[in-house]
Image 1: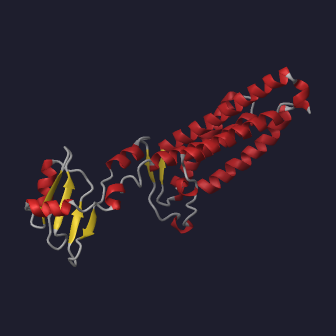
Image 2: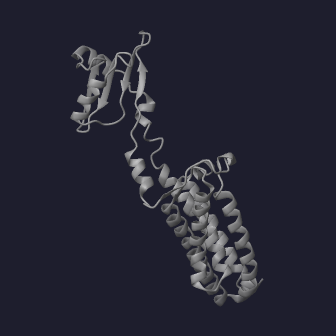
Length: 270
């Protein structure tokens, strides 16, 4: 759902990464003088942030009334979202013929094998469309009328001159990459947790465990809500990866600030 709130594009991702890198650098600069004191404040911020993430990510914000009314489901296969995206069948489009009322050409969007095309012929219905066109998996297309018969050369030529509808051409483009965009956004929103976790603890185990634990808590909460949302191991993996990126980003920033302080301590102390 996050792709609705954040338009994921190369530009927005780049701007977000730069902003997060700036935040990591600022935090590294602030914790330089007294890491222990800053860690206490960072842990407070971390607890508040985790609570906010749980409140926002666990319940179905769009419709609270769904809580307890849906099924509980877990997708253990981390690639299931991509497999579903690849296997989704494309819907066709009905295009009215010019100057002929209630007469349509059906443009099938799913590529068919020869066997599937023959099956489609048998399913042709005069009450559905006057003509049918399906792209073939090996290239080309098959045309037939509402009785499953091949079109004559003249009729086929006339229909071929009509441009397929835009929704037929771009129906897959509208959703292509949607899963990837959502996962990228999931990764981005967990980077701040990693940055704050680095400043909160001195132990690398503690720094690296916060994100995965929070992600598991979010997915478990979604499962307990029974709001029809599916808990996915893919989300845990992507969220944890984002958290690790944040930890590494903070570590690199701390190293760079430390080197800069060693070279010109007076300038940083101003």
